[in-house]
Structures are given as structure tokens and as C-alpha cells.
Image (cartoon, rainbow, N blue to C red; front, side, top):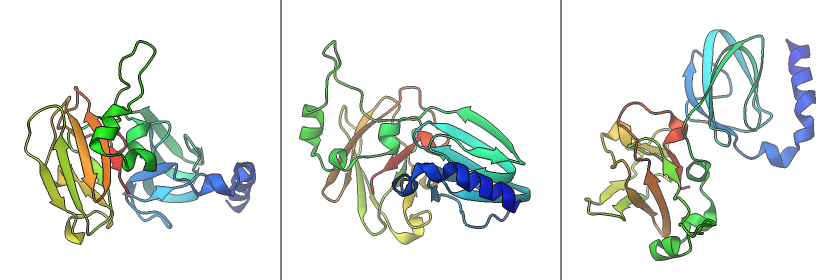
Length: 222
């Protein structure tokens, strides 16, 4: 086992330290006791996860939209998928938008008017699509203690205002609309307001209330 881990580490050393600091995937589920990772942790490229007997982990990759369920063995986190030795991995591509899962600071700080005014157009002159989530109940990453406001921008809908108190946050940094029994409208465009930050996004027209993988409804606002 030690020689296997050493080989995996050696194979990944070329990635560099800067890459290793950038989260590649989020831990969507953990079954059994796994040292060094917990539910809703981010994991970076190069991280090694050892899975014992009857243990499994589900990783959702932010860049590739791959959802992996891995049972037992040794896992080396990559940039778009894992390398797995001595274990079993099941992969599935799920609907997700990397623009929603990886919010840029520039997008976050634009005002509502600026956000819509500066949307780039494609070759035919049509506005580019807003970052999209594929479930009606967003999973929002935000700082505990702040207040999250969600406003509909393309129609009339009651504004949602949520004080992000510790007792409603998952791991102190995620607010789950599904857990709170709140939802948005399929096909709707919205503005998430968090302090001075403004972030425009939309809900896919085919989104439903059925359980949706984390990566497909994740909005990273902090």
C-alpha cells in the first residue's frame, strides 16, 4: 500500500503547488469513516484519499461535471477526474455549469444593471447565457452571519431573504434551499445579493424538485 501511494504521489508531482491549492471537487457523500475528508469538503488535485473496507466516497468535479462514486482502494484527486487503485469507481456526467460552480470575483461584484448590460454577445448578436443551475433548490456557499437575498429579474416573484445563521448552515458555509424547503422557478432568471456583491444566474427550464447532484445546483458566492 505504501509503495502504491508513493507511486501515485510521484506521478502527480509535476502538477505544481499552485494547482494543488485550487479546489477540484466537492465531497458530496461519505459512507463509513474516512480520514482527512468530510461531507461537503473541497479537495484539491494531488490529495490522496484512502478508503477502507466497506467505505465509499462521492466526488463531484467542478470543471468536468463528473460525479464519481468510489468504493474502497486509494484515490488520487485529479483536475477533472480521480485515479483509483485497488477500488471500484462509477462515473457519470451530470448537468452542471462551471460558471455557476466557480464564481469569479469580477462577476460577483457587478451591480445588477452592470451585470446585464455587459453580458457578452455571441457571433449572432444574442446575449450569452447566464450561469445556470439545474435544480430548483440552489446550494449556496456563503459566509455564515450574512444575509442572502434572491430576487427574480425577469418576472414578478416574492423576494427571498435568508439570514445565514449558524444553525441553518451546513458545515458553517453552505445554505441548502432543498433542506430549508425553499425553491425557485424553472426557467427563471435571478439575482443573488450578498452584502455588496451581486450575482446573476438562471434556473434551467427543465429543472425539477427531484433530488439533484450537488454540482448541478451549487452557487459559490464566497
